[in-house]
Image (cartoon, rainbow, N blue to C red; front, top):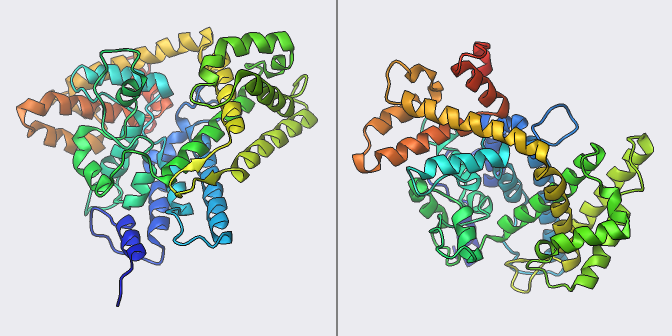
Length: 442
């Protein structure tokens, strides 16, 4: 029987690091289900998106992740239909289950309190391990090492295709550049896909790859993430009265904001200022009304506009000539970039959030000190979540040359496994502020 190149490539995509017993599902559907039923996935319901989740008004990491997975799948299905209509053979490597799995993975590594928690843990871990802490690398660590699926292996034993699709940054951490204006090297230092502590699994996943560019499926997931974040978060904060989107319909207000933010809005987008301003003004007119008071008709209009924007972004995406990358109209790029800048300017950089984040920083720093000292103290070790006790035993057997770095990594694993609520409660409990209930920390 002649084995074609396409069959060999697909077999490689479906390869897992450990032997596994197949069932009635295809390989990629099994990947999706395994991520969906993890403790780490459920935890996202209590992880900050931008503002700490309370009630239903704001997205949390779980609702955001579900939206990214839905948009990812629709993009994949659309591109596959396009290829079939053109009778393109062979079809590019796109599987809806793979991109959906990648979307479910992409935020698993976010620690308590979102980006401020990530930044503080990076500072604390970097003092002992140059790899620091990064949400994308932690997501990879979770699905390959920390999540529990079987007694036969650690991690979820996902296929190579799903793990590659979850890698927005398929490389290890780069050195911090001596030149702060070196944006390429600075990005490689800030954003990366795996820690060197997990390099064995990283090399298995990357085996055979000749480029550090993300796969087509990873690009789909990344674009879906961009859409979900830019549109849904803008709608959240506009409805809450935090983001004055209707002010952008006033010429003077818009011009001042655009002049201040244009260097970031137009970065890496091939479009002149005049055309960009026109695109953005049209988008604002379509997205928001003159006033939002929360009445049903206004709410329905906003939801309809958001849905139309997303449908437009999905339906107009296409593949490049080689079938290895996405082609996105600059109009849509500049719209999304402007929406993101509005969120940063009016929400992320607002003073009220800054004072809240200072408190979150104190919690993370305090928990790090406590768990750092508890690991080597038999009396204190009972404060460590039981699932990490075996990791402490392995740490005690580590080579002295890497002991401190591995210890910092373990402390980060412990803290990043908490939800926002758990981190706050554990901080209060360990500092004698509120004993709480035992079940609050399971």
